[in-house]
Image (tube, rainbow, N blue to C red; front, side, top):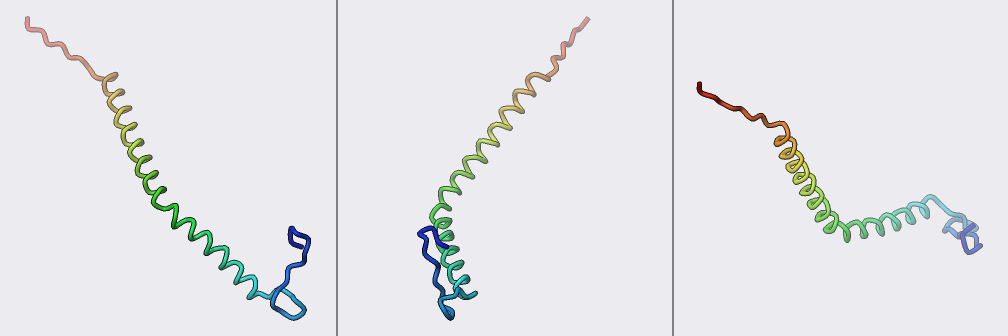
Length: 79
């Protein structure tokens, strides 16, 4: 039963749902999702680029910081 309480009607004999009805509905739903993905793709690309830049900058900053902590000071004395 559907949420409205009515029995779904198909195109088969006695209103039965056929495999073709199911395929048609699945293609209809998939088409709607594909349109939404196509519309959101540019924003997702920008978000991915920004996230990549943040990761690169964080790795650079953490690398510099650990390099400063571990750097050795060599003192040369002439005697």
